[in-house]
Length: 329
Ligand SMILES: NC(=O)c1ccc[n+]([C@@H]2O[C@H](COP(=O)([O-])OP(=O)(O)OC[C@H]3O[C@@H](n4cnc5c(N)ncnc54)[C@H](O)[C@@H]3O)[C@@H](O)[C@H]2O)c1
Image (tube, rainbow, N blue to C red):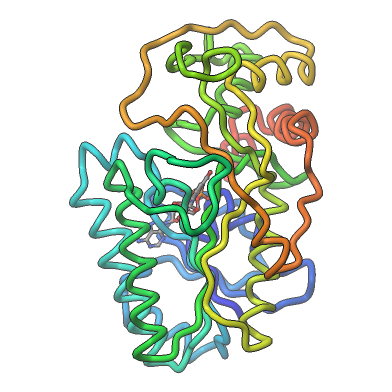
């Protein structure tokens, strides 16, 4: 069985759905601080609680034969992490250490970790390879980097094998599952909320970056492609593969204005923009060098085009105008 933490969150729920669809036994753990119970199918065993609750994790390991853990659970707002770093280090690092302790005690030695391109900080080179220096510019990025370093030490000392997947920008939806954060800080859901008239305009933070149209460039990766990469990472560890750090992006960047234009075409609705000052610590370009995911994991993203990624998010938005609240759960 695979323990998925943060299984009621955006990426965790899609990965849980995919594991379940492939017939892999999965157990969900989430404290629902930011997730939605409705996003995890009722037949999947669900434990409500903190990943830092060692007794609970030990109980899960007793009740199910856990072979590996995919650890999504974390707080993930850059701005909030700058205002409340203690909360971020407690939730993402301290609780992560307790989770790892409980798993090691239960004999679990395979771990897939949700890391982030935020561990690189201001890029010195784009596309960004995994060997790029890691100098986060905010506590969120540091919390992810600390866990990566802890995993390296645990690999050496306790033979814990891990894959740290450094995601770029997750986007899109499956038929049943989509992105619902409150507040929403991600561009595509906000663009679609504007298309639906739920927001008067989309904020564009900075239009004087050294990019083709002055707005920031990001690498958008479909959430189903992300989920598939987690299963490949589990397969890699299952084959006895070495611990690895791997970027997950498509290798193609799109500017904020390109995203908004694509969303206008997908939705066929007007979307107004409001230009605002740059946000501190927002680099101009964040695009992955995605070669390692292909060579080590054999991963091939199915959604290479931004238009299609946005289309899936829009289809979900039309059926879930208020996210999971639309389902009444
Ligand atoms: N969304 C992205 O673009 C992106 C990019 C890079 C990295 N990541 C990382 O991927 C992971 C998943 O991101 P997401 O967008 O799905 O986030 P999310 O907020 O939708 O999901 C996180 C889930 O973890 C749960 N959780 C948080 N702390 C917990 C704790 N201590 N114990 C138990 N449950 C807890 C929340 O309730 C939520 O359901 C996070 O670790 C995030 O840092 C996301």
